[in-house]
Image (tube, rainbow, N blue to C red; front, top):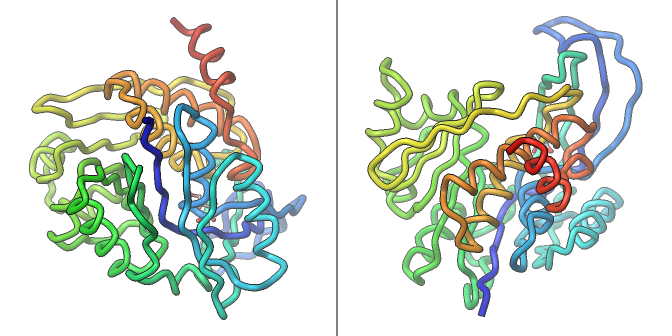
Length: 295
Ligand code: RIB
């Protein structure tokens, strides 16, 4: 029987404004159009995982009892994600995002209900092949989930975003860590190069995403490089989440790490060509067509 992927993490309603550039501290920028989108690193990764297909995706999330929660539930369900919702007395999480014409963004998150996800909320791990975590929910809960999954023989992936130092007990429970360069520095420290930092981490597989330079993975005693797919980017929001969800979905269906990295990079590139977080995540057939054109 196929195993499923369980994502435990955040869901936010994203309030997005486009502007010529992201404001500097103390600066006011006159932006243009405004829109709301379903977002949150956990929910984005669950949608990416479900759209990548191959097995079921379940998500543990905390939402308020409010109007912000409804579009988030709808987006996840429409993508085929099975939900385990903790209904919180706090408001649903919200993110305030400025997307620059360069496609880069600046994000501030009000965690709200996400901060109430507690160790005792982890659902049954029966039938779960991979647990996928991020750092927009309390660190104590993330660590507790990882350790329980590791003890149950479930493989554990962590996208360590937003950046912060991590306790050894969490790192020791991981099979896969996905970070960008800033997150890698926060975890591994040091003034040495990326390969040295990756080698220093005890996690068996570590992927560092490098934006337009692609990604580099430490895996099974060696290094794998995956170049980025060049696209005309309009919004990089959730590109990293698309990468993580697609990567874990591919590994859950027993793809090789090299194939999983290629598929995840293609999905992330496509996500950069559209506005919004979950709204930008491609379906698997789009990713396959994109890759067929680039053999
Ligand atoms: O990674 C992008 C996400 O970060 C956004 O959807 C926003 O909600 C924040 O969580």
